[in-house]
Image 1 (cartoon, rainbow, N blue to C red):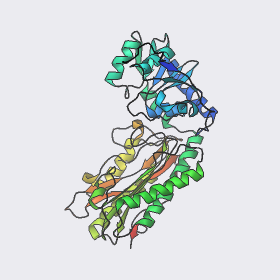
Image 2 (cartoon, helix red, strand yellow):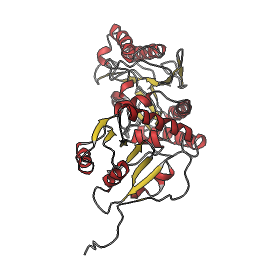
Image 3 (cartoon, rainbow, N blue to C red):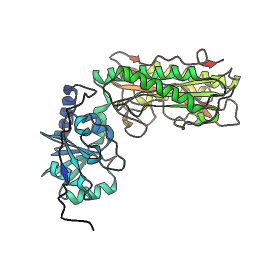
Image 4 (cartoon, one colour):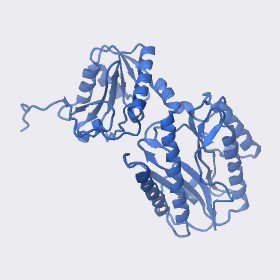
Length: 406
């Protein structure tokens, strides 16, 4: 029988080992928390509960692995504490610059008990409206019945959109790692090779490079997609076991992850000479890519960049084959968390570029199977907006002159 008399703690603290090296100096995290507290003052908040992977990592240094469990970062005007599950042991404390409280599984909702104790008597609580589920909201209300909730997700996103010099330095190195993966993939391309084997060559090369450049970082989540033929129609299509054939359109995609910071390289290639229709579409997409690169500078809006590239595609009668927006912000994000939606190159985004922002240019066209030039075409570079222009961090060559594999 279950013994209800056992003394099982709902929460506890355990500083197991020393603090691990974080991707940034303590002063960087101090500046971020100071910025968050300014948001709190602006909204007259007593405390903030952050729950998303991107915000917890940004403000604490700790990137959690949820596996269905909730995690949090509670910030008041004088404290900063991560709330983590006991399954992670002392790692959340080691991998953050601040305090940590561990909650146990012995009783349902111990996470919320920990949060309530940290918030204490705060009556105005900042939350991430785009991450707080209905179920979580209902439970929060039962533990903090008198709290007034204020959505600060737009404010924190705005804070993350302009990168610090330290962030830009890390992203710059990430772009170089992506190039290393790209060269490994290109070298592995040959008739009969499978998508999965080629992708693994790129992933392995990037992980080896990250070990050399960032020996103290968390080594996880780096990946590569390599797609061929019909599988190139989607930018996020999974890798398959398809074997390459001469004449295939190919899509190279490398994504190194360094302490939660994502970078990317994407290129169109052909195995053998492309036919005339394919070459025309590829060349048009390269022209759109180069136009986008020339437009990145402070003072221009995301919508205007989109309008200019749309005109180029419309003049070539290809606009109807555009797949998505023409670029997005970089920083703490991944294919399964994080997004700075206010800095995407789309018609409905009016954000004006400013120095310190980091964006991609990545036009993509795709034509369905059975039509001339069928396949997905895309190029992708990462740029840092400077005071008077932009700095392109991507070095891997693009276009038919470089990426036809003969």
